[in-house]
Length: 548
Ligand SMILES: Cc1ncc(Cc2c([C@H](C)O)sc(CCOP(=O)(O)OP(=O)(O)O)c2C)c(N)n1
Ligand SMILES: [Mg+2]
Image (cartoon, rainbow, N blue to C red):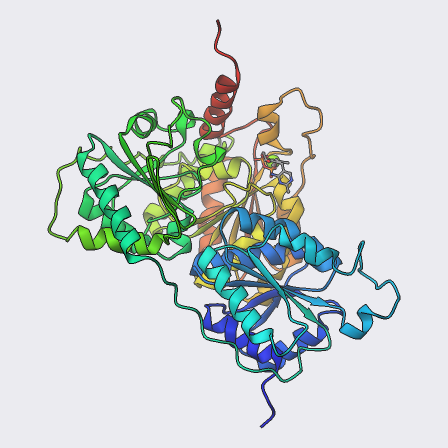
């Protein structure tokens, strides 16, 4: 029996921390790693066309499972192509593991400049420091097991990307076992003090509200947070980025906070609450910039990134999971504190008129809500653009989207990762501009056994930007015929202009399995969702100085 190799030990450690596949593109510096992982056979390698797609797909698997997602690339051109997706994972708290091939030790001292090398041989190593929570170069087989364990445990504890660099002469070398996943510890007394102070504030409040954000999903806390909301009788609101959270938790969601771009009554309540509990919410401009009344976070109750702030009190090194458990322990199921009735759940647009009127973005929301009402919700991967604003009008369902880092190109690859990780057929919402970036990854769906339904918001341009700067002459992209291209990539294309055609195409797409479906929605240039229009109006209003 041969001794387990570095690659096998790495696979052991990734499996033990929830990884179930690797998305990747090899290169000569990574071929030995790919070969050893393929020989091992426990983590399938799913290849795509371009490293941004590899990163977005792996990111999506991590978001779906609340575990490690893995992207494997070659040194230089591959790993640097991946940077934007890793940066997005860092910003949005995703435990993405980057495995990069690298030159062998003897090559590094050859005195030659190596292909794929940038400035120095360790330029890539230094670049990745800025977009990861930890990293290790596995160039010493004695220290590799501890390094792998430390880096992968950091990815899970901090819910951030990490980086492992593997010289190409080592994947097949014998290596000792990697320690099991570390069990997180924390100061129980500190957790108790934070929980007591939070509850005292909530119970004394006139209108306590709970806003949930991405960390609730990343740390697998949706069911517990839903139970906590139930026991505390707290209305649950999602942040813009947290849209889709608790969708399957069986509690009435009061809606998504969008400030001036959202439901006025809900926004007013959030902005005037005297005990706003933010659990796992990124306090960012996309979540809170368009507030009519600036929320004073000094008086909010904020639990984010291993810290709890209650007014000016700060409790450091306090994992969200520990806080939620402590709060649940203090709120037995029978407690039913009386709080103001939750705001009525928002009315979701539905009942699409199947007529010959041209499709507008809000018609797409109606058509999807009708579909969800008939067949139940489907998970959604959305790109950036008006498709994401349109998604705010959809009935609750699991939603993956780069709502804070806001990179385009996420939607289609993330939809592939979403279906790979969940086994559920997803809807993918993507604009024509974003599809031109990474939409072509859909051509791999058939080979990977995936069949998403892609809705392309084809408005012939960068409409979201045009809404910010109408006079720009650089927003036009021309009208691409995506429907015609679908067949050549192993799917079915449906070109639709009218609302009746949209409804028919959705029904046909839903009924067709085993081939991706691409619904190419020909929107009139300038057509925008209500939410985007309100968002732009709010940004303009807030950026204009109040008249003296
Ligand atoms: C990788 C990348 N490049 C550029 C941008 C800037 C940008 C937007 C954000 C503001 O940064 S929204 C947008 C236009 C999107 O066009 P499309 O996909 O067709 O969607 P729609 O027409 O619905 O807007 C761009 C170019 C971005 N977010 N991500
Ligand atoms: Mg567009």
